[in-house]
Image (cartoon, rainbow, N blue to C red):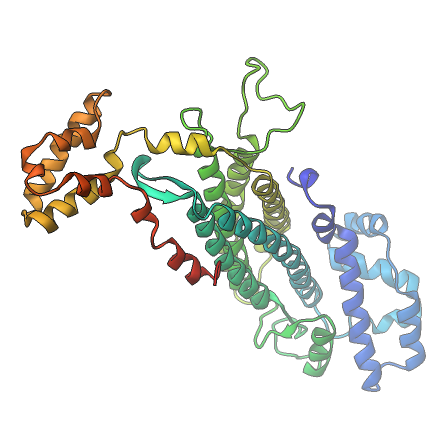
Length: 434
C-alpha cells in the first residue's frame, strides 16, 4: 500500500532479492571462517563462493512444498553449488540466518531514514533563521495568547528533529547485532568464533546473549523510535494545516501549477500533503504496538512475531522515509504570508498584551494580583464582546489604571518588541546563531 509511493531505494531493502542476498552472504562468510579454521577444504569453499546463487521464483516454488523459507532457500542455493554445498548452514539454525539478516535490513533502512532526516533538519534550520524576527501570534488551546516569532516554531521543530535523530542513531545501534549461536543460543554445534567473524564482516556486533532469536525488545524500541518520529512529523503537519486555515492563512503548503483542490469547488487549496503525513503517521504509530506485542515469545522462541514483522517493519520504515520526504518538500517550498501574519496579530485588538498590563499594575501600583487581574479581565471581556473597542482604548479611560500607568507606560506595554527580546538567547541555546 505504502510501497508505491516510496523511495525505490528503501523499498528494495525489503524485497526478497535483498533478503536472500544477505542470507547468501552470511552462509558464505560462515563457510569462509570454517575454511580458515581448517573445517572446510579450501577447494570446497571456492566452489561455494563462486557458485552460490539463487532465483527468487525458484525459492518460492520450493517453499510451496516444504513450507519453510530457509530450507527452500538452502535447497535452491545448493542446487547451484553442488556437492560442496554440504558445508553450508553447518551447525546453524534458521533464525541465525533470518534474524541476523533482518538486523542488517533494519540498519540499511535506518541509514536511509537518517539521511532524509538530516535533509529535513537542514531545511527547518534554514526557515528558523529566515523567520527568526518575524512576529506572529502564539496560541494556547487554539486561542491567541502572546506574540512570538514564526522562526521560533521552526526552531522548536529543529530541536525536536535533532532529538529524534539521536533516538534513531540509538535504535540503529541497538539493532545492529547478529547471532549465530544455534537452536537455543548455547553454541551447541557451532563455535562462537564463527559468529564473531560473520557479524564483524556484516557490520554488526555479536548479541551477547540470544535464544534462538535476537530478543524482540530491540525491534520494539526501533519501531517505537519510528513512531515517535512520525508523531513529530504529524505535529509539524498539523501546525501547518492549522496556520493554513482560511481565517488566517498565515502559511500554506505548496500548491503546484495545474493542481486541483476540489472536484466541486475550483477555489480550494487544501493541505493535502500535510494531511497525508498526518494520516500515515497514524499507521506508523499503530505498528509500534505490534512491536511491543512481539517481545513476549514462548520460551526460547516461537514464530508469532515473524509474520507481523514482515508487515510492520517494511511499512513503518518505508512510510516514515516517505513522510520525511513529503515534509521536506513542504518546508522547502512553504508559502509564508507576512501581511496575513501581521493582520492576525491584531485580530483581538490588543488582548494579547493583557499579561503585560497585569504585571505593570502589580509592579507600579503595588496592587494585589487578584485585584489587578479583575481590572484587566473586566476590560478584556468587554473587548471580546464589542468589536469596535480595543483593550488599550478602554484602559486609557479607566481612572484605576490612570492612577498607576502613564500614557507612555501604556504605549510601551502595547509594543511587540519586548516580547521578542529573549529570542536570541533561545537561538544561541539551539546553536542557531553565535
